[in-house]
Structures are given as structure tokens and as C-alpha cells.
Length: 119
Image (cartoon, rainbow, N blue to C red; front, side, top):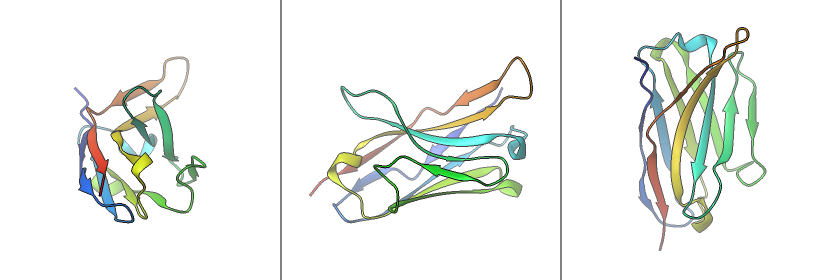
């Protein structure tokens, strides 16, 4: 069974920082693209950032310049560094791993970690 274990969420003031971690101990980690999504109450799930298996990074416009996604393959862990946080960044952040070697993709989700930005 593949687990994605998120950590690092919490309560932070506007302008503050948090670093989220996503550990995937059972995964053939280096093969997977790693994604961070977020879901706020009453809103659709939003793709925040992606780091591909080759290290290419992609960001949503709403977080570009403030968030940084990274990965350490020999630790089977992906990270999301979030700086200059805004009230509208409040959401449950979910880690996702995706690999599409052929017809059947491999896609896994974590349970999420709450990030609350409030003064």
C-alpha cells in the first residue's frame, strides 16, 4: 500500500512562511511527478505546484514567486516552501504523486494538511 504522508501545516499570520513535506516511503519516488493541490471550503481543488520526475517546476499564477516546490529523491520526500502567505492561501493542502508509464497511470493522494493564514 502506497502512503503519502503530509506534514508542516498550521496557523500562520499573513506574510509568514510554512514548509510542507510529503513523504512517500513505499513509492518508486524518482519515477513520479509530485504535485501539491489545495482545497478551500466551497471552492474547487486547485493545482498549486508541480515538480516533474526530471525536476521541472510549474506553478499556479496565484502562488508564483511566493511558493517553491522541491524534491529530494533519496529521501522520497517532496516539499512546498510557502512564503509571503496571504489570507486566501488558507486551505487543506494535498500531496499527489503521478506516473504515467503507459495506459494505466499510477496516481496516489495524501490525506492533506491544514494551512490557516489569519491575523
